[in-house]
Length: 113
Length: 117
Image (cartoon, rainbow over all chains, first blue to last red; front, side, top):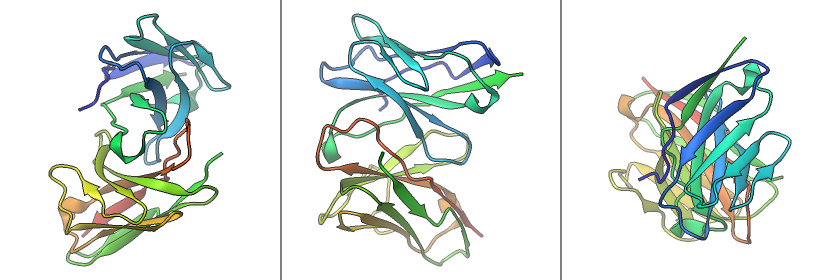
């Protein structure tokens, strides 16, 4: 079973920040938080990952709470092309076949003009 | 970055026939391959995991004789849907994982839309 919980859907106005929450209360010490998104009929696209520090890249920022039980993905200036299903996943890095990359139901983010 | 090629992107086949889906890692060696299936408006469901040169491990409820996985090389894995039926119509996605780590940004294939008529 998936180890994460996300709201099923969210709306965001174009140009505004989109903040997508994720709960992972049973995360282990060696598990990273990954975020992926999937645009209709495409494979999932990697966005960002983190262990315990906040992370930022050209796509997004990841804020992880100090107890690591939840995190927030931030798209600073959402565009219409950011409309997608966003998945939060926890997994050890370099897991191999013993560590499944399990997807929950994700959050459908709809960016409105 | 890692480049993954999955073919075909779309296939329509007649009921009872077999379909082969290829997944290639173009710039890295994939020790492990994950195969997923996704039904409309649903999340990705892991079907099976394979290590290069070994038999695949199938998730509960996935028929190993229907979904044949071959991972004979470090750059190529194939999923064959045998004797396909309309209920096998789905979106199939691969994810190769390198053997050397750490590896952070897992790259998925672009997916194969299978329609069985």
